[in-house]
Structures are given as C-alpha cells and as structure tokens.
Length: 396
Image (cartoon, rainbow, N blue to C red; front, side, top):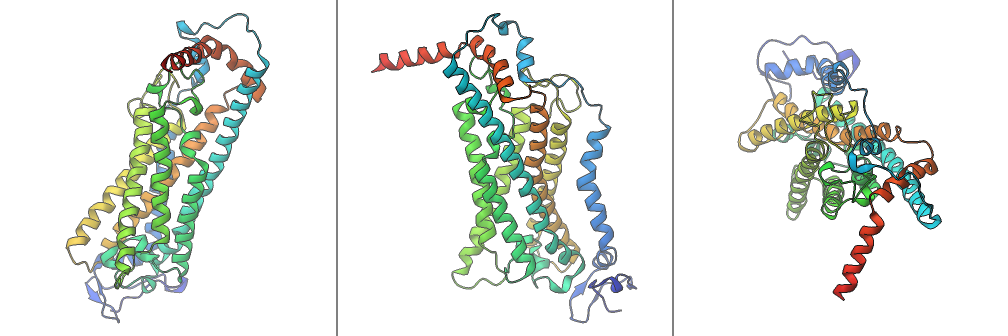
C-alpha cells in the first residue's frame, strides 16, 4: 500500500502493510519508518516524559537532606573562624562591602532571568523542526535521511522552522554572553575557596585561574553558537558556500562539547556532586550537603552526555554509509535536539539552585553586610592587602 504521511488530524490513522515499500514519490520506507509515522505523537509523548519528567522523578524519590546551610554558617563550625566579640565600624569599608553584596545580588538576579529566557527560546525554537521531522516528512529537506540534524532541517531562513531556530539560538547565545552567567549562578569551585582569601565564597574574590576559565566558558561556546545560528549548513553547497558549511560544522559541535565539559567540571570538581550524589553528608567544607537542584543538574548532565553520544555515533554511521531509513535520521535528530535542550536547561537549573541557596542568607543587603563584616575582619584581608602592597613597593 502507499505510505501516507501525517499532515492533519484526519490522517492520524494508518493501515500500513508490514513490508518495506516505496511511496508514491519513489522514496523508500522501512517497516520501522512506518511505525514511526503511525505512532509519531506517542513517540513525542514518551520522549517528553523521559527527558523532562524522568530527572524530576528520580530526584524526587531521593531522600533529600534538610541540613543545607550557608557558607558563613559552615565557617562558624571551624576552629579558626572564631569571630571577634567587638567589631569596629569603618564607614567607607562598610559602604563598599554593602555595595559589593548588593551588586552581587543584582547580577545573580539578572543572570537567572536571562538563562531562564534562553532555555525557553531554545526549547521553543526546536518545536517547528521537530514537528516536521516527526509528523510531516514531505516538508523535510531531501537529504535529511543522510544528515539527520536540526541544522539540515532548519537551513533555510525563508522557511518557518529555519527562521525560528536561527533566531532563537542566536538570541539565546547573545543573552548568555551578556549575562556572564558562569560567574553569578554557579558556586565557586570549593577547592579554590579558603577562609583567608574568600571568606564570603563570592565570585568577585575568585582566583585568577578560575576567573579565566569561567570567562572562556561564557565566551567560547556562545560565540560558537552565534556562528552556528547565523552561518547555515546548506544541502547543496556551491563554490565558496562550502566555507559556510565548514564553519557551521566546526563551531556547532565544538561549542556544545566545550559547554558540556565545563558543566562537568563545575559539578564534579567545583561542587563534588558526583561523589556525594547518593549521600546526605556534606559534599565539601564550603557548601555542605547537596541540594535537590544539584542532584537534578547531575541527572540532566548525564542525560545530555547520553544524547550527545547517541548523536555522534549515528552521525559517524551516516558519514560513511548511505542511509535510506528515516528512523535512523530521527535517532540522530532527536539525539542532537535533546542534547541541546538539556545543555541549555543546566544553567536554568543552576539558577534555581543558586536562588534557593541564597534565600537562606539574611534578608536585606544591610543585614547581610552586618553579618559579613566579622568574617572579613577575622580573615585579615586588610593585612593581606597591606602585605602585598609592601611587597610591591619593595620590588620597585
């Protein structure tokens, strides 16, 4: 029988023969292709449940620790953090500290809002292409079976799926770059935090190596995403158009890889979340037990890596073997799309985490400043700065 494609609600039922045939256009369809077309909405529902609800349910059934504490409270439990009974006020120093704390709060709020918007942009930008790839095959590019990527599906900005995807990805990458989110919505790497150099565990006092890596984390992948969004990978490249395809095919995967590596470093090295995922004990001496959102980020990260490995594996197959089966291209496509969505969901989950964590601090900026001043004095930051200035003068 002829293969019918889903183009409307009335055509949502099929009577496929259990055989491999060509449709009226002479295009080959395997048995699995026909099942994909027949149960397309079921596949979408199953993927949605697995990708979105799966991590939430896994984290929800875990026994969560109710002993989450702030860094300042952890410092109090350490013998070298005995606070002075009397604190001498310094109007200029106190005002400067209050400004720093208020500025940090504002930047965290701004970055949190931006990463949430970016996640929504990327998620919505994939919907039109996903609908076509799953239910309306007639509108897909002719070489989609051999490419199996969202870049192939959305290569033309004259089509709705192309316009939506390139605009969403490009705008999201620009907003992420402007927000400098890697400094404000993630915890400082605990091995590089000490009471003497960073008693408030704040990003404004991070060490030079960490600041450089976070700067690269912000710029490298997002500049790559902008290039991938604005430079298309065309099905039929002629002449110098090959340059466009090369630029796209290099920047897109490398940007995603760099982003995923840094997310892994943040959770593994910076927060020790992998080792203590199944434990309610303190994961490190700076931040205490893992929170619900930290565990959620671990699950999302593992899912993203899995989706990326599936995508790369199928792309390796498609690069060396001709493919006539639509379901193979769909596996590649969904591996890429799910990986991208999960990658952009990680900053959004981190924003929820940091907002929850900072809510445990004292209320206003002035109240937080009053609580922070004793820690600043006990850490002898002024003495450290004076010693550095003296060493600099001696060097001259």
